[in-house]
Image (cartoon, rainbow, N blue to C red; front, side, top):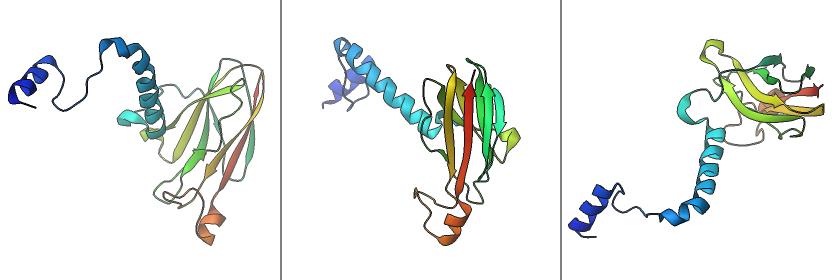
Length: 164
């Protein structure tokens, strides 16, 4: 690329060396780009801030326990579990619940409530679903416990969600 071409591209707002997308291609490219960004943000908690400002009704659970939560259709709710990442806790949502009953929004940690992870949902239509959260204790990047101690201290919190 010549210096004149690089200057012209910089003046047009396109950084030198980056591909350009013709305006006619935007309607077909934009949805996939937005979906990629949204999925990446959902997995990595983009922006370092909270994805939601309202946790809704907080339902507390714990490793090894099953808790029942009764909610109204349209109600926001959070499943809260004790969490200490420094000690090795690593909570994850095992599977997305029945989307007709409850839709997953995000996982949240609040600085004012250290020691708790919140998994935020919206109650949708009447029905029942089971939501399982798994704590893989000191698993690091692995998805399963590698040591006997990690297997002993890992576990699930189970929530039976009933939407009326």
